[in-house]
Length: 89
Image (cartoon, rainbow, N blue to C red):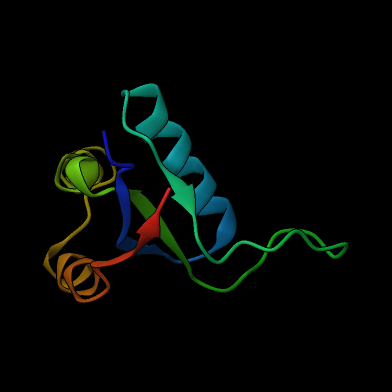
């Protein structure tokens, strides 16, 4: 079986929010990781971070976020604009 490709599916406003969203998705059974998080000695990043999920789970991940954190239409446009395959796991 070929490894699943990961796709970026949404942008969180900052690293802490992204970590919370990924944690919620993992608790729901969806794999998730942050793309733009670099550990810093200064603490979490205040810049936007991209969330990634396996390609076959990304639609469900986005649906869960839309339901649970009430992503609005503007955020969905941003989410879809960043959706792209970033490589094999």
